Image (cartoon, rainbow, N blue to C red; front, side, top):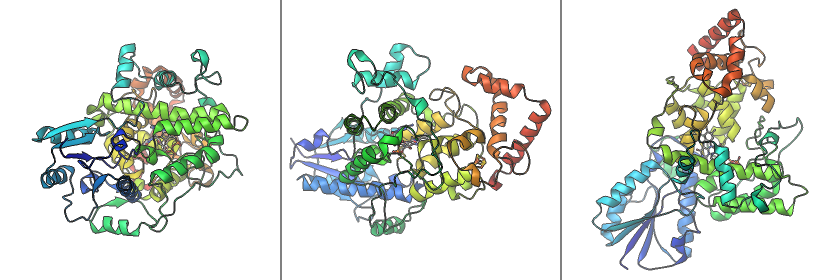
Length: 514
Ligand code: FAD
Ligand code: SF4
């Protein structure tokens, strides 16, 4: 075998990959910190730091294992700041005879590396990342074979549970008797209930932050350079997994949808970065959770563990399936024709709406918000305010530590913004203040009144909700799951309807002042 160059992207940090089971002095691995990746959207500073630290830790591990590694830091003299330019130079410099890479999870990089490999005069080969349960087009094939018109997550999820024998009893029945315990996953956090404090990794990262700033990379959000909190090695990722299954899993399902002031992660795992960078595999995460439940069945109800498993073997793989089935058209979908600019307060947290302030502030502070904050606070508002989904995408893609397009896009454009016309979400995720009050304590400290629809201090979510129903009424009349909302709107007193729409119009015209 001649000399081989193997590229590893920043989200391909899978120590268990079969590439690493053999050592060869003919093989060189390359990892690079490039502005090509930091600048395609404005990222949170913690996100860039997390990826670069995780890559550095991975390169160290490779070297310790006896592999040959080329690692370009951001300010390396030889670093031309793009994959193609760097790869070309290395291939020439060390007389590489074959180029190998792993399937990128992003369409953008997939196209780029395919084009690059095809144009090379040497051989090239692409390998699976050996991370996901499903291959790229497996879910598309699953729904197409079933000739399903709607791609329901639940039917895919049940198929996955059976196929991979996850929480399945003899005879193919689901453990506990039910496939889904979603109904018991909707509790509000009781008044004096203190969730366990999140486990944080307090690392010094000043040097890296300086490197990023010296390169002039534009970032968003805050960072405490002497206390960087995210896991950036396999060891830390395994440790966070251990903390999660012991401390958070017993109440994960119960409070999965709950939100509370000052509690930024409640019982959520915060494992998305460790998984999306592939430091942890979804399989080991699920197995660890089930194993913990098996040991502590008297303390951990099946609903907690099923709620967690569903997110990973269900939603995570489902989103990946949607992405590969629908790209590249998906990133342009805007079936509700929403055009408004994203208000500035998404970038600053300066708003009188307490729920929005809480969700945005913690996103700027930690590069993290949990699912219901993303869906039912910031996403809900953007949808009801008719914000252009491309602007919404850029915000989600930039701000969250775990945001990589394959998972961000179907969640944002599909699930949250209904821009695909209802492929991912069978009805739009919109709500008035009622739901937010039911699931959080945000409304208690708000400038706005959650019970008012009109008037100076009326909660904007209330009039915007009905305005959204009214604006797309024709569409909702054809959607069975929206029939109650449509009927409810239609039967309201015409004068009151007019007042609500006037209030919404005023808020939308003065959106920056909210
Ligand atoms: P937990 O609540 O502890 O859940 C466990 C794991 O399940 C997560 O780590 C994640 O891997 C998986 N998971 C849960 N829900 C989803 C989902 N809907 N889609 C895919 N995986 C899921 N997740 C991302 O990883 N990257 C994103 O860029 C992203 N963008 C989102 C944008 C919007 C508008 C919404 C509504 C959701 C988004 N999600 C995204 C999904 C979800 O919010 C995050 O995965 C989750 O909040 C991460 O926190 P956690 O690790 O504490 O999750
Ligand atoms: Fe949000 Fe309205 Fe509640 Fe204020 S009153 S926290 S704006 S839902």
